Image (cartoon, rainbow, N blue to C red; front, side, top):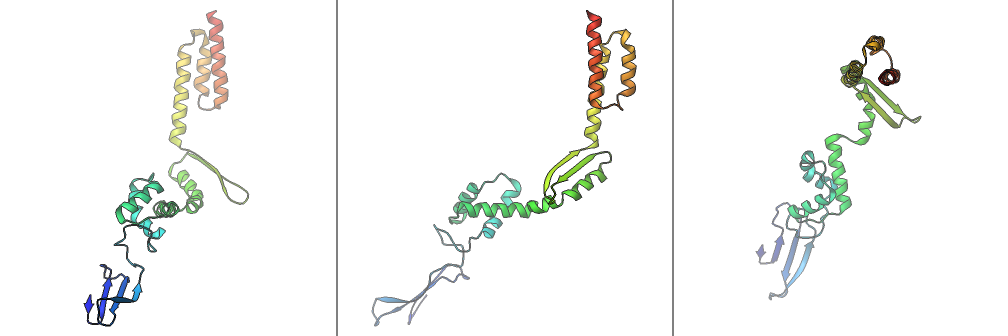
Length: 211
């Protein structure tokens, strides 16, 4: 912008505060800078370097949709993509913070996740009758471990055990019928260790009969 009093240069972004005003010296072709606002308040026109408005929060907003689709998106990739798309250099630590902020916004924070474990355990038992869920914490109420076993998994386990025991019993000679009847009666009531011991006893007898 030129006028009789001098020359004004501004950023091509209307809202940016970057501005230079130069006025002529003694009506010649020499100009003197009178005022200078040398910091951009926009994010355009930069080809290198950092920018005060490229905060972790700003970076987070630029990458959050990428992280929704790809949660293995690394800080190094964030640094490269921000430079490629916006011509701004950011540090690895800023990229890491922005990535963590995006994870927290998408998935909730780690603190919130651990705090909801007790409610989560209750909901598992409520919606899956017969399931087991045990949450263990330390004396100061810090998370230690959680065990979850759904009723369908428990039933599936015993189906496999039952099938294995039937296959073994089918290989028994006729004179081991007493063991067959005993196993069928006890298959759902004895614990797994007792079952293994009983099956081992059947196997031992079969070897004795075969010799």
